[in-house]
Image (cartoon, rainbow, N blue to C red; front, side, top):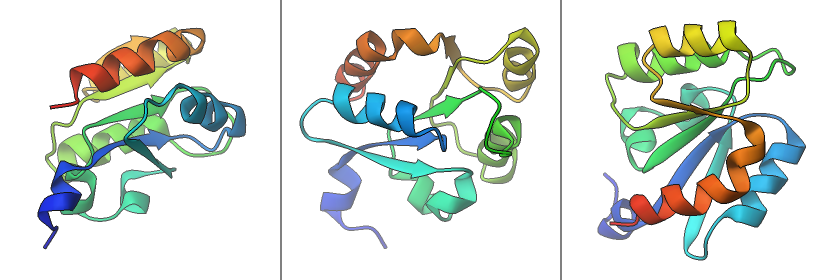
Length: 125
């Protein structure tokens, strides 16, 4: 059972193995926020562990062998969670597949530095 402090913590999940993306997230993350890094939702933990995060960033760029669309399906269809999933990069086919799996929004990777503080501010409740 998560504690009150764990429930109030400001956290997000970054689904990516890309070291450069992780560094960009760390640089852009506002004070008081924490990032969890994973390849899939099951790497984060079970339902209640994923639910402790306010939103997720999902890297759609190919490279590490993980399947970002499967991560969206796992969160939406298996865990039945509706945490916001913001996708970064990817080509049109990857975006379409993630959209069909019910990812929320799509951004270019170059937008991350400006996007992340805005997202954190919006989810700071």
